[in-house]
Image 1 (tube, rainbow, N blue to C red):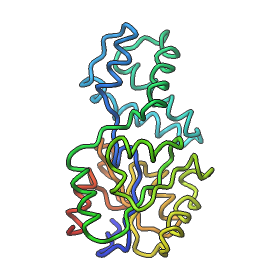
Image 2: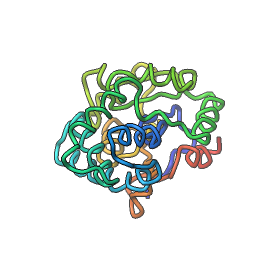
Image 3: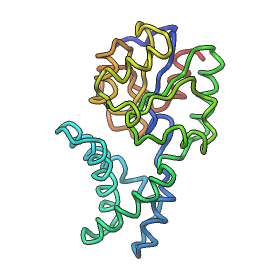
Length: 231
């Protein structure tokens, strides 16, 4: 296991499944409105398997939008939606995501961890593959003041794991990569990309998918990361 920097100059974070999480209740309501009885608990229970399918497609080279639809379709099929209604349900889900990002749930422990990072005096930044609406999402979830910088791949025109996205964030923070932490949830995207940019990567494994992972420090949440850093 690689060591965690003792006193990182800055903390950079992914967005989805690190700071903001899928709102299973809203997703259940969308699918149920189409005539399929799906509950939030079932969706939550099947998200790990759906995410594994999504990660496998990313390894094969799928883009962000294709990967997003694969994740959503896999999740609702696993929850009981018939294959024949996948496209229509997928379109309804996408419409709501475009209106207000479905990764809108912010656990209390995450809000507390972000406040702890801010109180440490270190810069805190978001570096995420997204659709160009992160600033709006953070405003609506009352997280704007938690970050010194938000770098959204859709605005930048470059996506993780390309190290350029991380380098742009560091440049805007005025910091070299040495000792800076980047925490995200996908090994092949977040750990690989951050390390290529010279950052110290951390895996946030909120879905408990990577029990045997040893290529970077692994935590279930950024709250656990804050504890490990003594913040």
